[in-house]
Image (cartoon, rainbow, N blue to C red; front, side):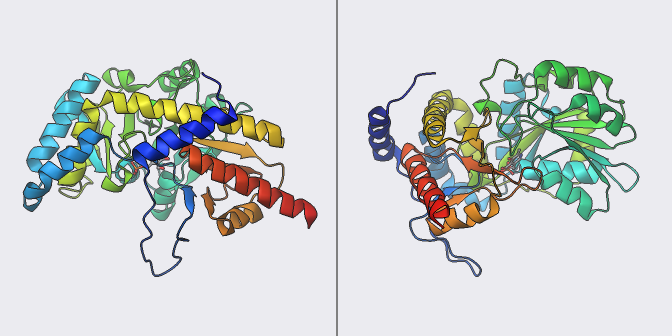
Length: 371
Ligand code: PLP
């Protein structure tokens, strides 16, 4: 990956902001109102927004907003089936991939069929499961912050579902292809393995592959994907599942009608045609991440290897007060993850936003030293 000097990075700031500056709208809320000029590095969004093709598609779709989205659903499902080399009956769209996670909890878990997850991992599924009275078996990540598939295997006995987030949120680390595939081969056939590939497009490590191909041979494998990350349309709420037809039927039986909307559907379809947008935004993400790593090295902080659009930084001390201090300084960063109380999760933003982050971190860290 190209190394960027501070000056080159500053030039990149100019180029990136001139091209696609995307202010965060301040939307009045009843609770906390975001500070006017704050930088949001807390939700793992793509700061550059939708591709030009998606923007045009949404404008063109305004007149058909009066229609229910059936035709647009069929069209996106057909595109995704083609993309993944599966039948249209093997795709289920969701109101974001969050809906796929929720449907999975409803379809495959019960008080008699526990959930197995890594610790820490993305909490949406464990939260949904716990709300439904399901036991959650948590298995700590291994020393390289991968899913500990050896320890997860006994935990999977009798479980309704094992959730594997790859790359994992909040650590941004991958679970190597070899151990994940061996795990899936060994899990009992009546236990679903849901592999959440929300950050698939950002993963560049050689040990990473998607497991979509395993759907062909494994009725118990579900892969979830989203348009919220590299495609830059988190606000439009489109995600999907790929699985065998019978498994998709179990998921769709839990779903309300038409949970996806016309704008999201047309934007998602258009996004698939714009692969340059994906490659360009992966590059911008990697450049900003490499720059951040060098700044952190200089400041004496270590960050975990990252295969996503966020990083986990070891601060060596309780991160909670720092999260609050960063917010006061106009930089919103990830929340506390109880399994890693000394690590700070930071989304990779634009070069300008990353500069704001580093400046605030330095200021806050120095203030702490002086206190
Ligand atoms: N899965 C993972 C691992 C995530 O980090 C997120 C959001 O941050 C989601 C799923 C949910 O994404 P969405 O519902 O926007 O598709």
